[in-house]
Image 1 (cartoon, rainbow, N blue to C red):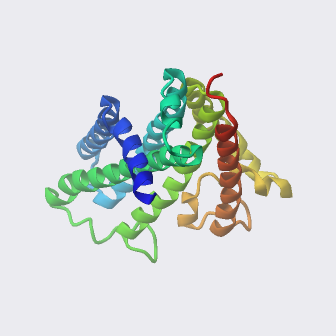
Image 2 (cartoon, helix red, strand yellow):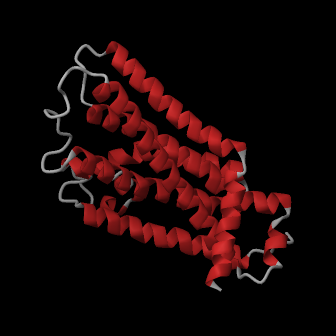
Length: 265
């Protein structure tokens, strides 16, 4: 049974990686990292540490990981319904829960792969640009975060950023399952993240207890790395607990809708 489930995940991965858009997304990330590094190298009067550039590029480009993964999450369920291939899946000896879980796991794996590609490319590109060919000794006098190594800080930054991405992707996955429209899922998810989130984030300054439990107040976790709480008295652990509650709610709705849906409709 476990082998069958792994085959389901492998099947979903094949659907993702046989598409040219997957490699175009990866190419765009690497190309942008290279372009930003070259521009920075060209205009900087004092050559910065590679770690400084890696941190800045990661903060700029990680949003692409969220956008690209949302596109995959929005289509991985909706396109099965629009193409009618969902019926072929459901006649197989697999439960609906396993089918949906395999799609979700494949999507999360794609997000992790994009994060690895971005991390590896920014490290390699900026090592070449700012350390290997730089005559200035900048690698020993720059520290992104006190009490941690530069590499350790970057790893923590990516880990917390992935939490934000997975939450956003879960929303897109839920919308795609409910409405069976990848365009609607992509549009609503990106609207929530890029527009609504920036507006509701301002609510964090309001002195009301109920604000502590809003999703968007806790969606971005990386400020905790610099000891900047999302709200006064808030901690990383509390933010993760709030996100976990929303995550369980979103997944429960997704599973309920998918298992109750009439595929003939």
